[in-house]
Length: 244
Length: 244
Image (tube, rainbow over all chains, first blue to last red; front, side, top):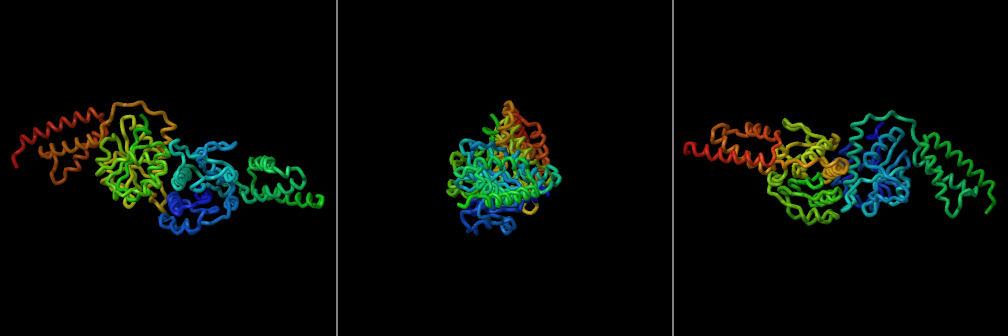
């Protein structure tokens, strides 16, 4: 399975039916078919068909998710797109590096390319759901690209990657983001109850722990093992906790 | 002078104000400013401003040409874009090769990237005005890209070329396409009158001669020398021709 089969395009908080249609068409142009709308601003996407010339199959199969974590739930890796080059404590990839990473990670399972809404793009919090961040270098005169054109550039590069580089050998299925999020939830509960995390600000330390697991590139089996472990830990610490 | 200063985007027979606006915006995204509309299908481009977010300068400076030869007149090199991979007797370049060529030729003068209309793209005859042809590889499911997205992909690559490769040293100014077209016209007249070309089908042989001059990559000075030579030849053979 290469990038063509494993790539999911996630459009977060999309507003314009024209953009949706144009993204569906350019996905068809480069041989991609898996599209998820995450928390769309509107559900009246009738205008999309008009622009989705021969991208109707993409629209027919399109799924809608309540939020970004739900959209990413069965992916093992996600890259977020932004035009902001000043990101709090994050480095960013060039489009070519990002596409190389997507291809590499596609050996472990589904991978997501996330594009933000027309008005604000992706916030820092939304980008935090993505393992990495990419920036398409643009001019200072007009740094912000149209959504459908940004998708066009990135999907062109993804299509070319699939055509020119051999598909990497399949690896053991990677941990799905949904499973990792469930694990985080259990870790937080258990560690709060165990009074390890500061209930006023648990995020920072929790996030550091999550990052170490992310660096380990867990397989799905390993992630499930951790999840089960923390389910047991949570139950056990709750049993021992003083009744509130 | 590199590609940023020398690149002209030529939109031939554009129909949609939305596409025009989106192309202007993506030109601004990647630092290009020279846009020519060749034989536009409509002149009511009011809708374009809405989509040309911060690309207004591009629209303000935009020129309109009656046809493709007029649009290309002050360029030394032009590449046409098509989605048809079956071209009569022509080979085509990949986007990366094409952008490399544009950068290389930009050392000699202005270079043009030509995109056809929304409905038919560029015909063989229109492509004949371009020194070379490029194809963006697409899937068989939907080979035809949206105009603004094709422009997006190509201008991204042009912008990256400018950013990553050193500007080639400036060469002596290349022959402008307008001068070469004037030369062709004089060659045809002189050679018809001299009964060298078949008046029923002069094109084939004439085109072969033109190609040899094109291979020679004439400087503007050399092209003007040829032009003057053929003006004299034409006058001389017409003087000697039997009165019709």
